[in-house]
Length: 293
Image 1: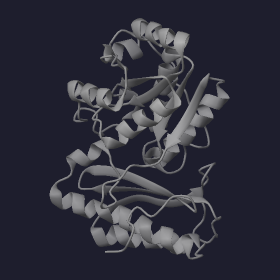
Image 2: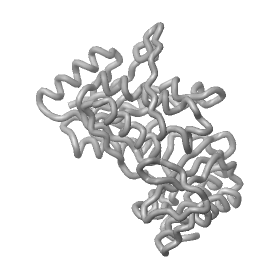
Image 3: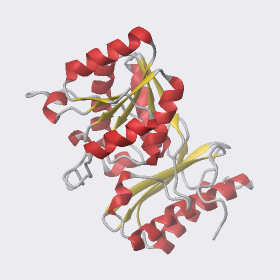
Image 4: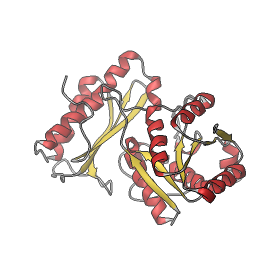
């Protein structure tokens, strides 16, 4: 069965209803510019559902001023071919006017979870994410939605929002997919030159040092954070944040505290003009790089 590409909102809603008459719908929301990490989400959705739908929509409300909305890579034809090869059967690629009707005024906001980490430097970002995901869930209806854990804060925010709004959606997180050298796959990696890509490995290198130290028993937040910060400096990256938090509430821990056996270590840094994020859940995730170079 060939893939079906739908642009009309009501047509997609009806297609999702048709799927549910015979089975479970899987949903993978994306902004396009797809890579192997996205395809792993499609594959995971196939394991959990009978038919998988992928949404491709570059959401303007989650981009702040002077961010990369205009230059964000777009390749609908190529993306459709990729998700079809991974087993998706529906693609929803709506227009901005369809998702944000003229005169619209509504936003969805999740408090608490959105203030730290990316919320500090991108204060309107998560409001844009939760608003568009709520809209997509509303159109798709009951389903199993799969999101990547590279955007761990986003995953936790969406899980909280879905629970709080009583939405009939099961939200599943899938482990970060990485290149062989440990770099987390990201659509924004396409912006990196060969030299910048090498520098970007400083993120994975620092996280790996912290994972190994935590495994050996290190629990000092300050020590673990410093391992990552020093790795970013060595690589010439511009740090946005390196923060250890509670893995569930995203509440930041002071560098004077000790962390639990399971804690989130999250990073955002600029490589040239490109902002990259990555994370590990200490006590749960393996080191991004298996061994020190």
